[in-house]
Image 1 (cartoon, rainbow, N blue to C red):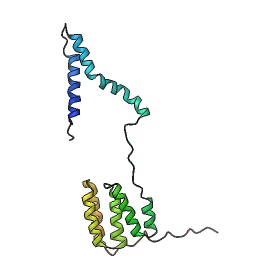
Image 2 (cartoon, helix red, strand yellow; image 1 turned 180 degrees about the horizontal axis):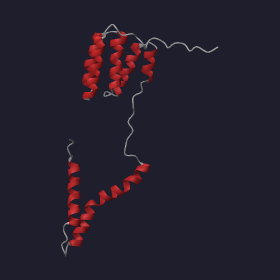
Image 3 (cartoon, rainbow, N blue to C red; image 1 turned 90 degrees about the vertical axis):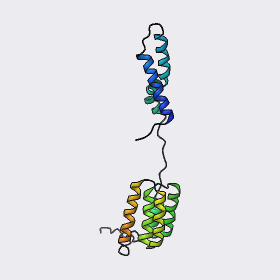
Length: 169
């Protein structure tokens, strides 16, 4: 469960006092003054609630996060340039350390395509330190164990070009 911050607690208390003053204190002499004070306490929340649908037409609350591009690294793998592809994935990991796909692909290149399990072990340990999400760590561990298990039995599919298209005559 997510804990409330100090600002969230202050907002909740302000709203509770405002609603209490509006609805629960009908004192004859000060009733109107207390009701106005209650409305003033929650007026910003009401205005925000009423304006939000219209303001989102012009200004979005969500900020777009850049996503890594894998096209260059994938093209290098396809061309059989594994050292350069590893460097491309390294650049992605520098910019996006939580991106599990980049870690997995870099590990696959070193373990499967190059066959350097000493380096693969180093990269695996580095990736486990960088990845914070337990699910991503578990997926990477599963991949790494499968690479170790199947060492030497992998066929380098990415390095072979696709068959040429045959035109119908």
